[in-house]
Length: 71
Image 1: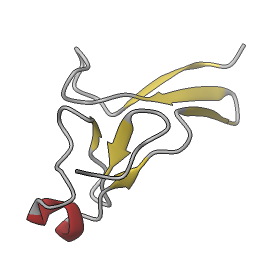
Image 2: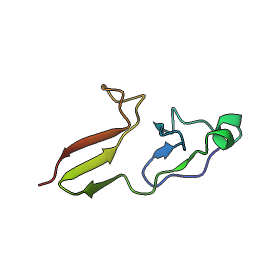
Image 3: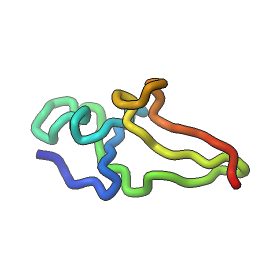
Image 4: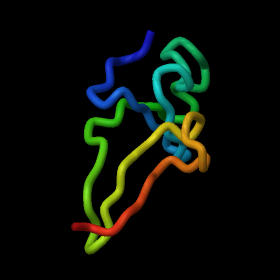
C-alpha cells in the first residue's frame, strides 16, 4: 500500500515521478530511503512556461515534466 495521490502520481526526493504502477509501495525500502510522496498538484506555471508532471516510465520521452508555452 501507499498513501492515495489526488493526481495518481508520486515523486521522490531524487526527482523521479511515477504513477501507481511504477512507484514503490510504502512497505518497499525505497519508499522511505528515496523520500516518496503523493503529488498533490499535477500542473502549474513558472513565468511564461506551463508544466505538467507525468510518469517518466509511461511517458514516451522518459521525462518527469512536460513543458509548454503558457497561453
